[in-house]
Length: 376
Image (cartoon, rainbow, N blue to C red; front, side, top):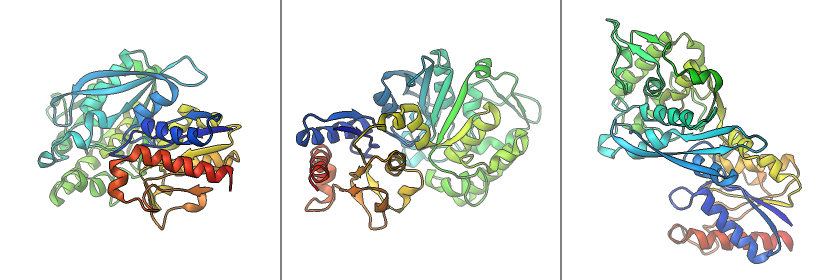
């Protein structure tokens, strides 16, 4: 019996790799002779680097870069060889360098935060020999339109006097840009593809854009949101690629999606399909008897690109039954997309217990689910 185990992380409790291991332990109790393929997954947000390195094999690199407020921090990125190729691919999470959890709550203000460190991570990946960059851009602390990141990669932003603006541009400084000089862009991008795994489909501007929707979540006041929106509009008008502002994902990570598409020619892609392709999920599911997936919460929002649903759709396309084992499942969750759903919380297990002991409960639910699958 061949099983592919492809969960996302259970945020705050287990990484995707830890979740896959726990599920595998549970399956092994019931089917000790099963052929288990552990394939940790992610949707481009938190945990993408660890999940992909674990799923494919690779190595982690640590780099000292600028944090969201300009302080030195240690950030990790991954280097992998994607299935079927010897080319080196770097997997980078912008949240590792420019994420909201890196900013103390009392200092959160997207007018003062920068993506410069994300650009430094990308540059380190180029230095390591990668000529494909997969960048997950969920969880940012920024609304700088990607300007800080672009500065780290060689693009210069000029003020009205023609002077080069200082590095580590922040969201509140965008309207001080009078001209953009892309002549200094790292020439290695001429032979490097950049694929951006977006966890949202927001445009850059407007009521559903980077400033209006996500600015307040990052600490922006109503007045600051208006200032950020004006700055992003100004940046878009100067970019020469104003039409990209409406592209799905342009508003992701405070407009980093827009900046990378406009100046690096990056492609903006839904996160789960990109990760699934990179780890060879479809190929790994061929011939499988069962797929088990899971994530922290299965709810009405799961159909909008979350991991468990994405895995289920790929498996269903190949005729592989799918069991989902989430931490919790709401009544509005898309149960119809799975052959079975076995949440941890319920059947006598409370939320506090599940959070305190996620590994044993995940393994137990996997054992129960496989037992019912084998002996319906």
